[in-house]
Length: 225
Image (cartoon, rainbow, N blue to C red; front, top):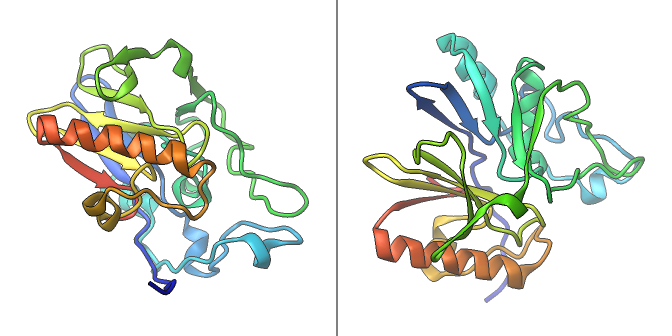
């Protein structure tokens, strides 16, 4: 089968907890992408290694939040690739950000960088070594302590990749790029592009699929609804 190029959606998800308020899972693209497909990214090798995105004016997650006057309590990041984190630059610098202790910055100065976290005041690193080992999914963390929302260690796409399980009446697992699209979900194949370790990523996806089969939950891939 020949290689083909195609655009996929860049997603951010908003959740509400009765006690702790509104949170995001990933932040999507910031407002600058409406005018420039490379956004705020810069560097001597930007056009060689940077990703080009198309975003309509007014469609960023910050536009959504501002229009509805939502008071955001935090952002849970699956990983630190530009299409999942750049939206944080348009959010208040005091909003807490959560991601894995095994995740690394994608900035490679002076070749390719954006410094999205530079002005952020509250970065909460989730220590995957302290997560509880569970059947099927492996290492998980009860984020709010009430079994409503779990961080799941799903490495492979990046070393510290996390997925998140919304454990409500209708259970939803936000896979991030542990499962890139619905096509990958259907055929059980992980993404290879921009992936740190494809074999490890495949094992993470297989755990997610086993969990889905047992509990009949909805899986939201990183770039499909």
